[in-house]
Image (tube, rainbow over all chains, first blue to last red):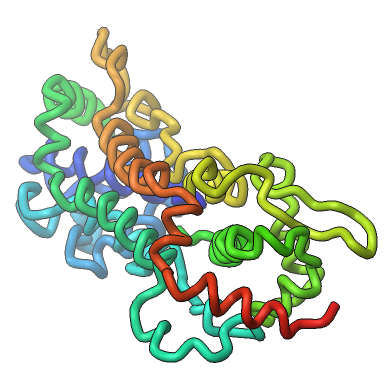
Length: 158
Length: 158
């Protein structure tokens, strides 16, 4: 069970775009150069974030990417969901009801399966952490990042 | 980010083998028939649990599968790790240090990346739920399952 690399890329891009708010929109070329990532591939990874209303991308030579909302209004959970999909990691197919062993269960299967319930509880604990943290929180937790990012950005040419 | 179907299969088989302890070992044919699962495919899904010391499989006509340890000594986390691998769902490749934006960071990157730290925290919350629940707990949470499983098992022929 692994997340795609897009999650790391997307979250770092959101934080970077938060720091570069004054300079926005930021061209995909500069954004890719900041992390030494392949430009076209990065663009594909960011498009779901635009569709989810987290980023906006403006076309044209002066165009580029920016946060669609203030960073304190974007949770990490939203970014991860936009990139990885809304589905839960565990999919219950109710195999308890299938086959010979599921016969004559009476009303036993009216309640949720204990395995499914546990998996959901675990996933909720995971989601709670990510939903409780915003892009603004991540920006604050790297206090030297803003100055470094702006300084290095100013040196980049389109 | 999805878990394989093997997690649902493996956990239900562990619980079932816990309930059928008196009748163990249980042939793969009966285990597959209990859930109406493809026999060979189920066997492949259970093999990592044998390698992890969670199940044992005895060869021969009277052979089959059983729990390798008492169900209160097997956590759900162990089963999931055996089936899905020990790796964390989020892989940090330290892209913050790469490219133009990572230059002149001084000692800033000595500390962990905030994004990576958050992801680890979320994953630990998830792991804590699964590590805190055993196969014996799952058996107890389906109080009618034991009798139903034993009753239906007795009707199956090898």
